[in-house]
Length: 104
Figure (tube, helix red, strand yellow):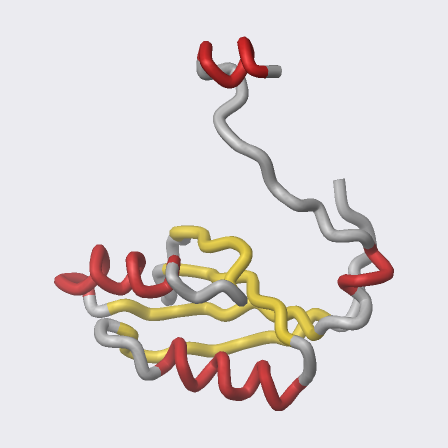
């Protein structure tokens, strides 16, 4: 493993949460419209939010989609407020994930 790390084949490790744990969490997709001149700053600030597990740049009406996890709906509400109040965030819309049909 050390050789693979040193040669750059392995660049890091991540945690893959089990379904039992994730089913206790509230997950959502948050579409984010960003003020273009603040895109880099906003991306850096979003990366600092631990509840955001993934962030995608997308085409269309919104610029980004964040995948977020919260312990409950109240925490999700606060998280959405935090994201919406960041400098550079023009507006957001969110969709709570009700059920995962499959995951590869």
